[in-house]
Length: 211
Image (cartoon, rainbow, N blue to C red; front, side, top):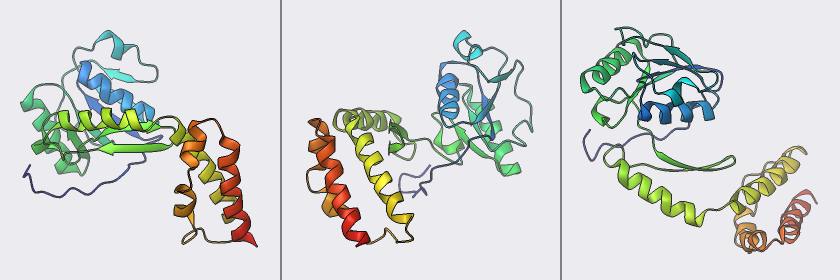
């Protein structure tokens, strides 16, 4: 993958959709867990599967080698066999059938790459190098984990509730003074346990909007 290639960032909705992981090792387990976290219906194709993967609830395991065309019918596929020739075959099959394929640690055989991610409830922060250095992505994520704590999830919940209250009246929420509220010390209040004062700041914004 060229170093100057620009990738288009997206968040995919895979809940309830069939997704395939080709491979049965530790890397495959990480990919399976990521898909399960997003609510996907996960299947695995691999002749050998580690016990942790075999024990994952709701995962269908097909104990056999990958066969050409196995990608058809899935929303997306992750190739994580550790064998370059097999992962490349999975990618080629995906390209031929219009199925998105990620090949672990092989950006040249990917139609999408997976960023390193940090979750705080519905808040999702990602770090990506376009597949050029997964190590740097992980390092950046670890630094962000030290900065972005659970208080950000609380902040997001307060803002989301206020936004829905305003929208329920038919008023658009774009262009409101959200930035002013965020810059008013709300995060520090939540960190110090004064969530009620943070809520009061948002309530004033809502009241002023609905007057």
